[in-house]
Image (cartoon, rainbow, N blue to C red):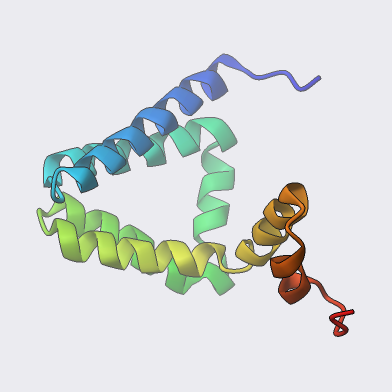
Amino acid sequence: MVAITEFQKIGLGLMGFGLFFLLFGVLLYFDSALLAFGNIMFLTGLTFVIGFRRTAHFFFQRHKFRGSFFFLGGVSLVLSRWPIIGMLVESYGFFLLFKSFFPMALGFVLSALKIPFPNAFVSSSSSMV
């Protein structure tokens, strides 16, 4: 069993509320205050969950620099009251940061759901038989 510290519990709560505020901010036609609050809460929660050193290491790796630049630039645009452009830039940065993770996550979801037709496209074998 993995022990979760109190800081990690607080971090999970902050991340959850951050995602809620981000979703609510988008649903309310890109309300800049809610989006800014959600971004700050999510990044603070991430820091609480994995630690400051690991968060800094994740965002400032050499091969992830462009994704980090766009993601953090989008956060700063949202904080400067440019919510639509900021969320677009932030989304592009999020895609660049996690693009190596998406195929693995998609393969896991498809294998968990046991959908035969899409699994043929995702699987590594070249035969469709």
